[in-house]
Image (cartoon, rainbow, N blue to C red; front, top):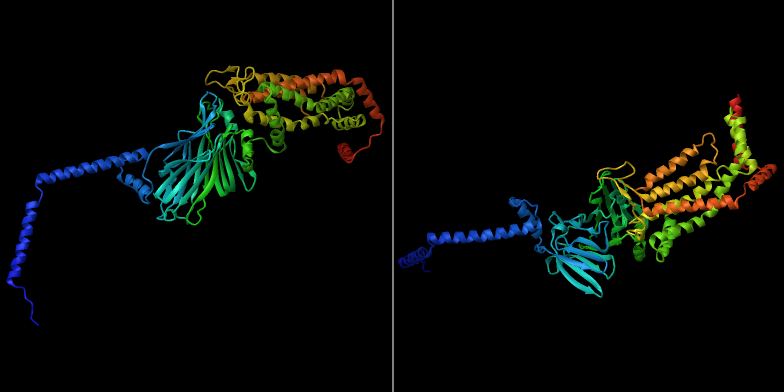
Length: 615
């Protein structure tokens, strides 16, 4: 076979081609002027891109250090690494006849919640969410082990209708069929908004091997003229482990970790923000921080609440159905959601006291106030309650009348055994036994009235029906009345910075009532407190105590004590006859008195004590 060799012609051809290429390159190279112009053009493009990037970041994160290029790059990388929706500012509103909500594209969360039918003490609309006082963020780990918060994501809003309901869908997308969705559905004339968090196709983003949490935070906005008074009834309440109701501390900072939480109520006295889960959260870490200092009169927030709640990831996806309530803490409204048990978030009181408040006083007053002005309804309710309690009042006064008849004989025993207190006590008890009188019988009726007292004590400050309802000089029966305001900065410890008239009237009525029932008639026994001292101390304490409480409560006790005094005057002057009582006591003395086991034991103990004293 013939061997191929590189001949001279081939070499000459390659040299010519190479020379032509060099000539063409040399002829087409840019001039120095053209290179400078191209450089300037590129710098202009780069500057415009940087300007747009800085503007974008500044709108989203105004506090981010824009001079720190690493921080800016990390921020943009965090949002864009998985291809989430590009930043788009804006808000969408949902509103019906009673509620106005504003939802931000950033974070997909509610940034404003306003009650349309209520105003604060200074006639400003009632806001539960406003100016960044609340947040609802879902935090999750990504598949590349970084942490993302929905507060950093931007959602695309889409409005639609479902029957008469408004539906707002917000999606943070990585593609058309891969997204995180927040869905809000608002019904007409309703304070409850359906709220759903769900994902689709984000199993390549969310690391389901690590916890996914829902962080819900809120600072309670002041709505009442006294922030200290409002703060007493501002409290985090929650239902867990079935139907168990628990609360965090109302007066100090508190923290709890619970299981199986069905709903959480961030109560702000007369208004509540409640989160309800269709399927209970498996657990939750809850905190409440008191933001009100005792001397503060103008602070804007009451308490700060936080909740850390786990979200389950099933099959790489999230689907959590919830509801959010923004509305009054009113039994008439919350009862509509009976299957959720939200009415239990109202502080009716403990045990039997709460039962009386919830099932007796609340519906009874609601009935009366539908026919009469609110203040008059309190007066009518007071009259009916006192008439219902008049048999107890009669028993109490009858016991005191018997004690008054025995007073001369008790005084005689005191003189006879003045040097022997034990013997004096024994003989006094024998006299009571023979006469058929118990010194404690006058106290029993008072104890029977305690459930009524406490139930009313909880009813008036928490009854939404009384909020901002006026009567005489009181402009709000659910808060204190003011006839004189002390100069700014001046306050009497435990009394306050104002003078309320209804507590003064109630204290005067209590003083005269105690004069009739204790001061004159109750003999002082060894070891017993000085009843006259209590008679003077009690009204004074009530004056201080009620000065900062609901004027409706003071009105009730003022009217109640006036009626009680009237009933007792009728009992004393019309019904009871002291001569008949005296004759009955003398008749009782003649009858043999059989001791019960307790009386016999007490007698034996006293006799043993007397015997030991003689030895």
